[in-house]
Image 1 (cartoon, helix red, strand yellow):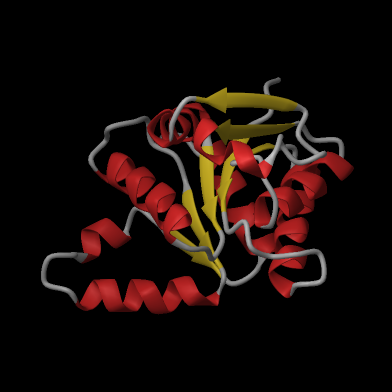
Image 2: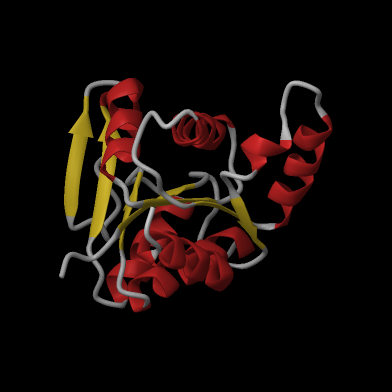
Length: 181
């Protein structure tokens, strides 16, 4: 049986001694123990930590790197399969098209770009249905602000779930992948 492939979006900034790194490591472990493989941007920070956690539990890790960030070097050491793309658009397309589910950790503009394009395609049915889970407290505050906007209805928020911790996020995304769409 094919293991689900979960795309995890997150910041490249956290280092090994940061709480954000440890949460991403915990997420990767929870996904791997839950029978999933992960796909990340392939570089450092949260991407590395999640990759490491999944790899340590026997899961497969796909890293989707991009020519624009060639100065960052190759993929992190936990990546089993590297997919190198020409540009950010191709990278985003690969992450979104190939994943069975999605988890967004807190991050910067790159994470927001990945999140909002995924969210747009899911809500407009521009790709097959899949679970999208926002992991961590900052996301709840962001969603509260969005729900207050006249142009951002509750219907859009129905296509996304939140989880306060990595174990909850892994559980929700795996339940969503297993549920009939």
